[in-house]
Length: 148
Image 1 (tube, helix red, strand yellow):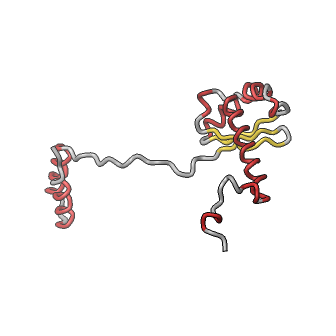
Image 2 (tube, rainbow, N blue to C red):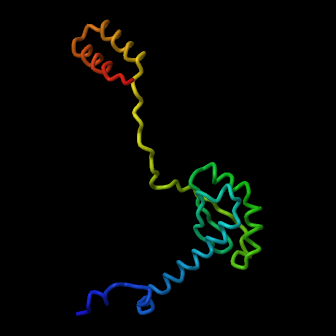
């Protein structure tokens, strides 16, 4: 049985795994291509745009929303002209843009607004006009939550 330290997959023993070497090489090539594509985009469109692939002269990008996708399509000739200066993208003739919203968006914590004195007064007033006893109690309790 191998020692636990020998079982760990590190970059040193990647070459010993037959399919993994090609996968890492493809990932490295994709990363280089993505850097080149991102450098050719206008600065305002860089954020939220990803390089997907480039197959048979068709460059595919992914935008986080439809507005950004429209802007990319509108400026596609300018983008492709810059890209063709690079040897890797010399034969790009078509730009395809997909809309792919981010999977997770960090929402800011919800801030509870303090009940104003005016709103508390209105709640008490409404409680006074209400015939239902339970509703009146709830409205009065809400009115008591006023903060200074």
